[in-house]
Length: 165
Image 1 (cartoon, rainbow, N blue to C red):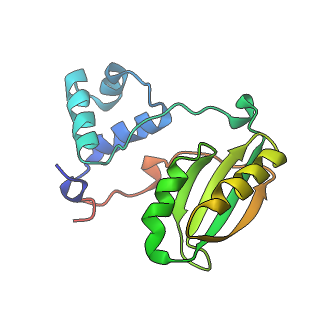
Image 2: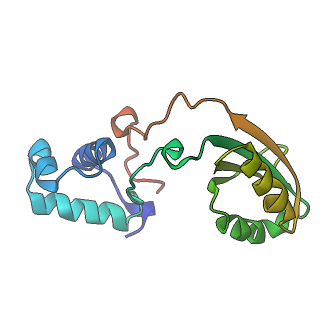
């Protein structure tokens, strides 16, 4: 089943909302909240995963707890736009990069990185990112504070009858 043809009903939306709030919520508790059986929740969650609506769940660790005290956003210009796949492959090998976005505007790519300190950030920039073939230039913005971090709240958005028919 592809995401292209999966239609979300009210129960799917309620299940998604509960799982976004607590990805470890027991299916039996979800079943009680939705007024359906535990096996029905299990089947619906499996269909949502198979359809690509649920792409995973994860445990979040505060980077500072690991000593990663510097968060930076790095925009990247490429010397040859068609080399994007090779550059992305190289970025996947850099552990400090936690997000990579293909963006519009002056730059082609925006990275989110976590480093131990500014010296570590400079090392990653000068000796890793800027040495990747086809990386023409970078611009770095350091995050001083993250004031909002949240997951998408399912109930805040009206679901399309069929996701991108």
